[in-house]
Length: 198
Ligand code: GAR
Image (cartoon, rainbow, N blue to C red; front, side):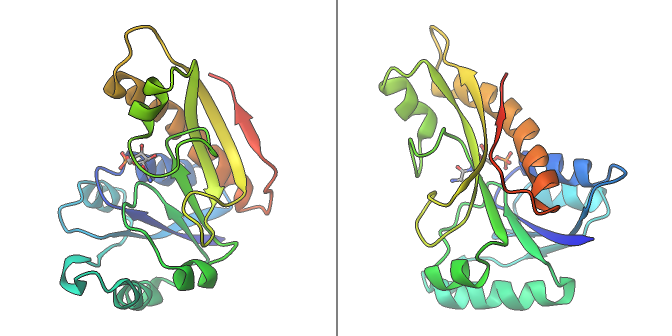
């Protein structure tokens, strides 16, 4: 089994979709730990309810020293011996050193159709641009933010009267389909891009 660590910062709805899919028979991955950068991350309780170990490495005491923060993450992960990491709404930027260490073994979900709208406020930016289609992407993490090879995308229509919130909610439904589908393939070594239609 491929041991999967999932990193979160908030409610962890994507993490839940990954855990629930890995709990189904025949999945080649198993969740070994859910790690958050804040003890207040709501997803920690949802992981614990599912019997998955949790760990917290609060970034704040490191006062911007990302290398020291990541060293603490590496130490926290050691007992769980993950083979790979899924970033699932983990809102800290990781350094090139950490990304290199996990190259080919760390994936991320991003709420836009990459390469469009790397970074934050993706839904508002898609609306401002007048896009008719929007969506989400899962990609391998490399040293450049939101830039690694795309493993899958799901599209949604942008509707008349959408706000960033209504659009985000429509995209999130697709995130919960896409991320588990991509992880299922990734843990068997399949990195060919997956396109989901809504
Ligand atoms: C998701 O929409 C995810 O795509 C986004 O944060 C949300 C987390 O929700 N990630 C990023 O913006 C990463 N740059 P969740 O905690 O309910 O999964």
